[in-house]
Image (cartoon, rainbow, N blue to C red; front, side, top):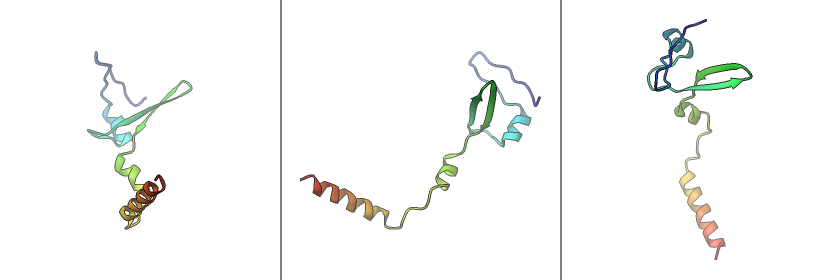
Length: 78
């Protein structure tokens, strides 16, 4: 066992210091609760910055490409 926490009347808990260290979480971070059968898994939620960093970079002319697609789509509706 790593630690325990009490549930407040608002349904909140404070993660014990050891758990916060293990999860590498700090104030403002989010955690994910996942249930698999009778096991509850708690893990750090990825930040939006981390999610965006996994996307390929946009081409430098992305605005022009989108504008041309919108114009072409609009022209085809006449």
